[in-house]
Length: 230
Image (cartoon, rainbow, N blue to C red; front, side, top):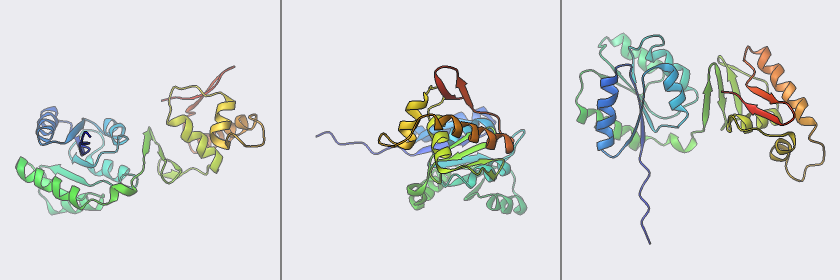
């Protein structure tokens, strides 16, 4: 029987300097890790959806800095976040930890030391078992594990069936679902009722999205059904 290889640990490297991300990506891949990269906050949020096991985050980036980005994702992502920075002031170190960081590594650094710290954090990391899939779309955050939706940090008051519809559509973007299929997936195949209730729930979801300043992510394909816009 063929022995199953252990799953590679995934490291997300966030830095606007391409030579640094390429160097770190190449190094960690050579050490048996899966490495993915992002050069901006928006790219980083998309990559966070892939559920990395650890994040290396540069502080000094154009636009949204590492402190702000860390604070934005920390409530939804449980993996260790290690700051990489040329700053050496104690105030910056304190700010990094207050933002939700787990470690602070000053540039220039030894790759072997960085690898040792990464390995140490991964060995201690027990939070992955409780981590949940999270989707970031503009200011909208969908936490599938806690079954909650947030807009600019505010939780949207969605009923259980409303969240189930959002979950179904958002996890299958661009796929069109007719009312009958949504009803079967959300209410169950043996549910007593009519698929006409789906349209009413879609209206409620759109009303909540509008109230909380979200754009309408649910697109109606007339005569066919509904799909999630990205």
